[in-house]
Length: 566
Image (tube, rainbow, N blue to C red; front, side, top):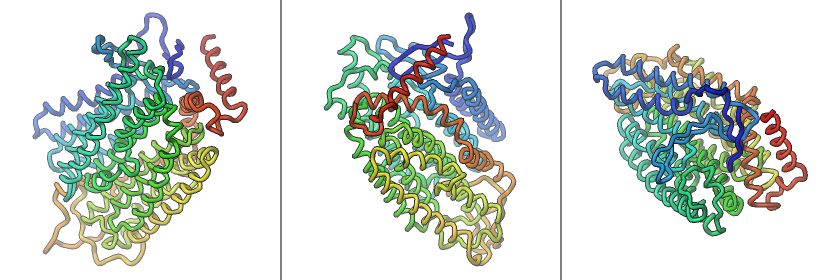
């Protein structure tokens, strides 16, 4: 094992002896779904079974490679590991540079889990070839975004996510899908222009200081920036990342997109796409502009807290179950923002694990809601009542996932929220106190929605949405029968639907009961970022000014380095 020191911490190369070449795990993660998408494009449209087999095989293969990355990953190091570096356009500083650390590792694993689940939950009756193609292309772009160490490469992958999401929402969404897709595309594309300007400005400043043109964030982190330049570049990056997340008040596209998207689109938008924004904030804002982060932390904390309370209140008055979950997602993103800008190791660790946890339980909620729509053809709570009488298993699974979203101890939602609030209390007490009220509001609107949908006397025989078919097929597929159609009781969850939800339910419970392996791998990278922010803020971060914390982290890092050298 070799150990090199960079601006982003030690870079660890594992499992290599002289003469050996490491398998390019990270490059494979990006290229396998992209190659499968190209293969699907070449297949005849009539070969539906082959198209679906290729899609599932590619997603399963990505999951296997991600599991291998987890196995190869060395805990205890804060820097990038398993680097894949290849010159692209050397004269302009472009390179294919991929790396994984404690922050990106579990976001990659979450992505690898959610895409096959989304594909299984949303295999459409109409045009499965195009649907599979866009899902695979989106998976490649998302994984590339999480793994990029080159800023230009990140931006290209970041922007490449727009077209697949637009096509999924516009092609397979519900009644207002065209409006929702266009709104999503315009908002995110326009905001990304600010980020592109910020990237070019940062590269030119670095080139003027060093004579080297590079987009490598490890080298750009050493760029000397004046106070105003630091703040302006931070704002340019955050404009794009806050819209993508979305952070209040840049969220207005998300309720429409989440609610109008098909089941798979909702799962991928809320579960994976939103994390590109929060991941970018922690990777680039904290890594490249720590001075601006410290100066503007109160502003972002305020926006995060407002998002928590606003999202909860608006969710509580929704009569549409899917929009309710969409607004609850805004509240959970608010918690993540509070964790990021509280600037303590505890809150940052909580924010990272909450990104993963939110992706899991929100995906499960959207899939369950899609099952209800498949049977009844509606998301309206007044038209749902007493569903547990006919579907007790579905009601039980919904209860467990709902409690995870509330943050009940023993389930994964509790771990992240507890770390975020306890860490934020050390440095920004009043923001943490107000944010705690969001937990109470979440309990109110989710329990109220559950009672309306599953408790009470069932309505007259509900109209079934058809035979056991794909989950949440959207308005592009045949809806529930009308007119003289025969009424049928609300159906229980099928074994196929249970298999789709099973991995999410297992992870929700497992991460709630035993999160230690995740936190052990996240913490070294998070501690590195905290020290980076501390060096910019000096004593202005009270929790970081505690005697012993900085010295402890330095001593621990030195011990790990000496152990690696031996």
